[in-house]
Amino acid sequence: MRRQLLRRTQHLSLAIAILALAASGWLITRRVLEHRQEQASLATGRRVGLVAGHSGYDSGAVCPDGLTEAEVNLDIARRTAARLRRMGAQVDLLQEFDPRLSGYRADVFVSIHADTCEGNYSGFKVARVEHSALPEAEDRLVDCLWQQYEVATSLARHPNTITFDMREYHAFGEIDPQTPAAIIEVGFLSGDRWLLTAQPDRVAKGVADGILCFLAAAGTGEP
Ligand SMILES: [Zn+2]
Image 1 (cartoon, rainbow, N blue to C red):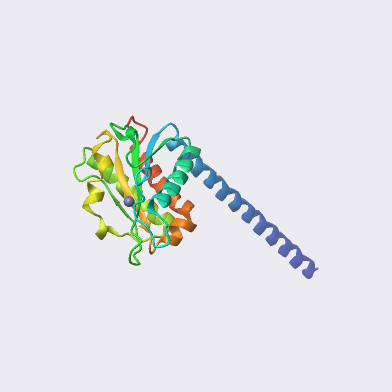
Image 2 (cartoon, rainbow, N blue to C red):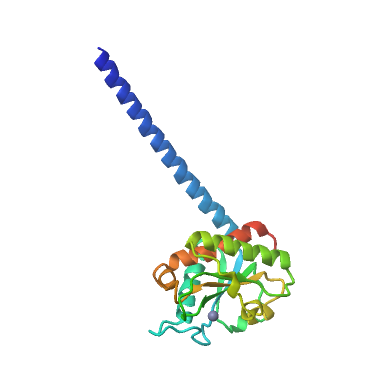
């Protein structure tokens, strides 16, 4: 009798455990779906400009085996564009000296570059134009990219190598000053080559999440 009761209690606890597991699984799935919907609603109808650094112009940094910065940038820019388009954004994939840059207007603009193949450095960095017409918005964009890219890739920040070339990046002077803009160096072709070439979707997620973070903070206003 007592053994039967014990067995029944065991069965009951097992059933409760299974139910609890199923319920938490359902809750997690629902949360993930809700999060995707939130991200999609942030991106829907928003215009995003992405420059694939050096594309259509030169190779950028080159590794001894011939890997070029331009091909790495283009791959990442295409994947970032695809991610954002899937969420409903209208993405312009631009070349380094694209004629569309002149007076370009969008909700957000990000130029994607990678760093030298020399040495064995690792890390990423983000910058905006030195004299910004939209310092608050552009600081927010830069912060979002720092945070989200770090989370997605686990790369370290490399702020000490932000150069004059980044702060005075040519496209910042060509696009409409009311378009919030930033430039990201997604990693070094030397020390971060594996991440950049073997895990480009993680890299693209980092850039796309940075942009979505900015769009979330910017609300739904006009560019
Ligand atoms: Zn570059």
